[in-house]
Amino acid sequence: MKAIILKAFGGIENFEAVNIPVPAIGADEVLIKLKSISINPVDAKTRQGKGAAGRTKMELPIILGWDISGVITEAGSEVTGFKPGDEVFAMINFPVLGKTYAEYVVAKPSELAIKPANITHNEAAAATLAALTAWQVLTTKVKVKKGDRMLVHAAAGGVGHYVVQIAKHLGAYVIGTSSAANKDFVLSLGADEHIDYKTQKIEEAVSDIDFIFDPIGGANTEQSLHIVNKGGAVICILHAFNDELLQKAKELGVHGHNVLVYPSGDDMKTIAGLLEKGIIKSHVSKVFQLEQVGEAHTLLESGRAVGKVVVEI
Image (cartoon, rainbow, N blue to C red):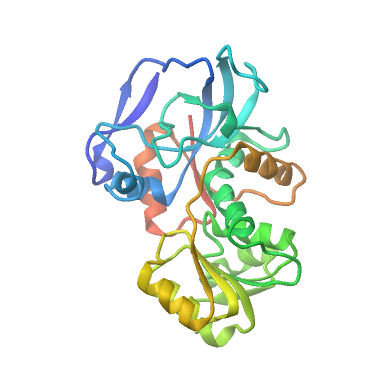
């Protein structure tokens, strides 16, 4: 099969297209012929030697990637609930390598969900790590409910555009930040208000905020602590909350949470239901081919992608 390996940590020049054997499955695994994968910031950071590479021991060369949509071609003898021919989507094996920059991948059935028939493989692949993150952000350490007021930073981004949609589904009043160029897009997701972070001071533009979603980290996380209501929470997906910042949050009477997404077939089934009913939709910024994975990384790192970047296999 065709695969893209990363020979060394660093730039996109370290990607190389190779032909390697199709992986063998265990009795409790399935083999999936991939149709689409999606690229996330953690892919780029891991390529650089950070991200998941900083959390797990990765020995080069490696095959990056975690987000998939495709068709099961083989199922192990102990597998139940899935069979060859099933169209499935998932985030697999995170934060250990999912090895999805390839034509075939091995996966655990416990991480999979059936792809809704009314969406494309590109849309399904987009709604994996990012949509899972959004769902888990809003329903695990905090539980967003009707009447809550939520500020979503980077609302036009990969995770952000799902957070807006799911928060609205859960009944929240949502304020999204982005550049002015993406105002209409953010409002089209269901956001009640938009803030242009380049021209408006967020701390002056919002008030009475119960929850803040922060995919940016750094000074943005600390500033968010001063914006959210006492008793409210700031949820960061970049693990910005160290001991010092957690102490500051405590002194301010607010909660700070680091959230790391985890694979979950049950959560993927919930996301499948939301996609099937049209409650959430994937916005795909651009589609690349497998040999263009480096270009996909470059677009993602530019910060100009709206929604998700997808690679067709």
